[in-house]
Image (cartoon, rainbow over all chains, first blue to last red; front, side, top):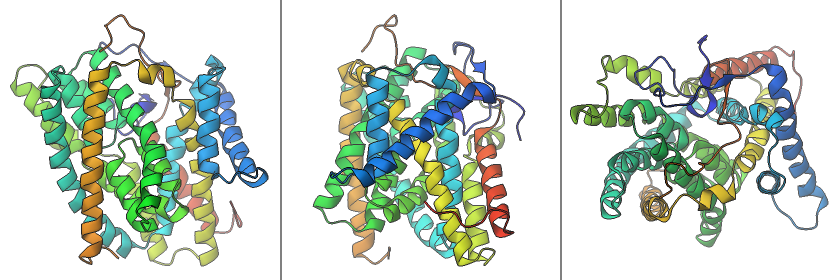
Length: 366
Length: 47
């Protein structure tokens, strides 16, 4: 395990890479387990309260939605006290632990078949979304590096991809903050629009899950958007999303090479090392558990326990999505980046929806 | 677009870091839990 400390938002990456945060990034404080405890307790408390409300209130809303709503209410009314913030930062750890454990619900042949299909669909989505976001950025006269960040964030995995690109293409700190705010805003919008569209189109759990994984940018919001439609949909969202995230190194490397050729970023000396450092390692854990499940390492009951554990791990992650969403900040980012993001995301959502329907209608998916 | 001096989005987690590689830590915990369940150290878990 790496002995270096890393900020949570760029958890997929090693800071030793050429794309490590630039010197303009404010110094981050290492935190101890004791400092994280209050926030972790808050995450689980909100998640468990969401589960309780699902059962006791006459209004039937899934615990996933309750956890987000409660988090949103806390964050945007009384606010998140400083003592809770280190622990809330662990939401990404819980999210990735949940993704690793959900591997128990996949047989390897499903991963290879649907994951392979996802890779194909992701490749198409990547080319189209990068092109459209770049075009929209030019039309709306955004700074070129902000356009690059929005394109990277919307095509791969949101904030993680933007943070991974930050050191590689050396944008202004302002551009990074704006791109992150835009991506988070779009993720918050997706939480409420995607399930509605899915129900309107009577999408199956698998088709909807694939769509949410392909179209929603930020990993946390993507997993939540899938889970809001159903537990099975959430499972397929994780698979499509991990396939999409695996492209992060290639896209960031492409942009790093481009901006270096323009003399506006440092050259990447060791490209294979760069790709490895950018690769989201939690995908390997997901695959390992899936391989063990396929090989019969677990009994049926044990697979059920692993599946339950993944849901317990997702619970604080869902609460964290609500707690870290500051509605006031989201609307205060300026209209042009948001307009580019909204138009681009609508395009991506329609294209990926079409791709998913096409793959089902042609029997590529089951 | 906001001016450079405008207070930016402050995520609750933005000024903190964990002394670990989160990806590898998640993989390590996940595999450890899987092994504990496999060998009966952790019994049935429901959600």
